[in-house]
Length: 277
Image (cartoon, rainbow, N blue to C red; front, side, top):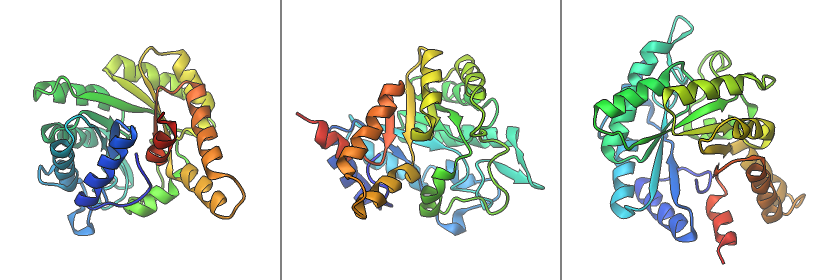
């Protein structure tokens, strides 16, 4: 995940090529959707000519070897800014999962290698696996956001994408930062439902969760160093308080040391360049 920046399709392809050349083997796509395209149920999420679908096709055409992971959630697409469909102030779990399945299949049709449900709806991993298999995409992997906390570190990302909730918050479906045990309950469910990879988000403030998950699964464990973590390091280094390169690498080493096999970070291109022999 190279730098915390919005890209046009042309800019995205160029940036992905530079990252790939630096040694970054995969990218993750998050869309900034135009307001007129947002609806109550987020139908734009499964538009085969939508922004994400066009981005996938452009990336795979330019770099067939590049692994493309996509986000599966409705917050960029619905008018409420929530990860699910909202009715009378409540998230409709099952109705949301139906739309998520359509979204994931459309991304797979466009060429996605991995779909990553970040929505935290109940039962979505099993539903996504069934939908992908039924559509002939058995080889498309699922990286589940297994432990996604209701964190204050997401602010810069939500501002960039315009995906903050219009009312309320996400604490009814994202996890309580004080709850350590729930991560393992979610892990058991995701494994049973067919996840190929599990993720902890955020990373830096949740190293104990990464360690717990690593100890209790044989699946690959991913960890997401989110926008707030990234920008705190960038801001502190810009003001001369810390050495950006040193603190960046130390933060990534800590995530790796905690047990992450895969790290999603906006420092990816910079870190990969430094690590190349």
